[in-house]
Image 1 (cartoon, rainbow, N blue to C red):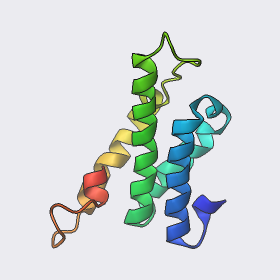
Image 2 (cartoon, one colour):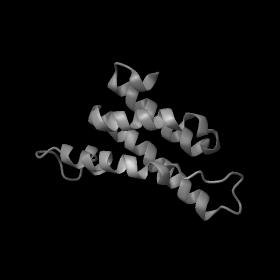
Image 3 (cartoon, rainbow, N blue to C red):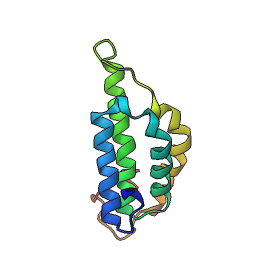
Length: 117
């Protein structure tokens, strides 16, 4: 798949697309979440910063979607599955490790892997 492409830009766009899919089609995610979890964790740990940031963005988007679902649970046509809560223990350490990958000479205001984490 695109998340395993040899081209970092394509991998980043793939995770960006997954984030959008999570927002638009949350109720369709259950059969894919185990694979998405593995792909995002792997990319956050060892991929280029641009790709890792998009993998983190997937979890950020999913979190926003779940907060919205919990806030509007009476009006929602589907229930929150709490993916972020279930994965939090596993992804927290990985995301915190991104803080160590900051560029000491980089722009303090720039969006990079350390600020994404």
